[in-house]
Image 1 (tube, rainbow, N blue to C red):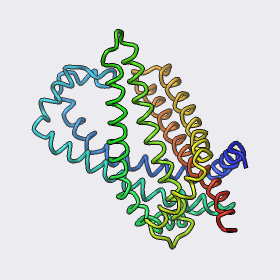
Image 2: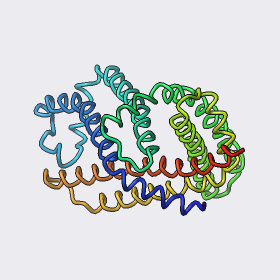
Image 3: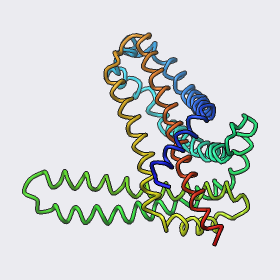
Length: 294
């Protein structure tokens, strides 16, 4: 089956799972509010004593930022610790939710209930967590080492450049190389998660080896399908940025409109995340058929 047909099937599956996207959006919003609440309370408690509290909603005034920084400079380690803890919790939450997303998309023609969603989250969490921990050195090795080699090569090629254009082109190529490496690793990790959720009994290392062989044989097809889903995400992001650019700001009602548009984008990102998984599941099923017959 062509990538366009696989992608169209994935679009249909994603559209039918709108309730799942709403759950992901609600959970992410609740998490954001819980993380932002302590910082918002601290800022609100000090804003009335700030040098520029009146301009807080209209612009980030330099005097206000300076005053706030002076007040909280002693608490910088605590704030950084809280931010790192929030980041760690968010990563764990993402690993947890991936189980519910993939488990729901693997149910043929079904719309999982909330209980089934959280059951899938818990069922796949520990294996997904082990995969996440194993992926950390992979990212460090491939992104750090290979991207570092590409960066050194580009610096060597542009060292004697007479104008700034070779340097600009090298910077763009360096960014593209980084995105390419991140995208390839992310794609393989997605297929391993799908294999773990579909197989249910295989170990993480065994499933990793199996999926590397299975997807590696059809790498170009898998990568092309991944790019189709990526283009949908890019189109969504460009639409969000264009509308956000023209939206007026400065008063509470207009700030509310900006907030609602931001939440619409977050919801769209959940649909995009599901589209990535749904398209990969369609290809996974196609690759499984000849593997099961041999």
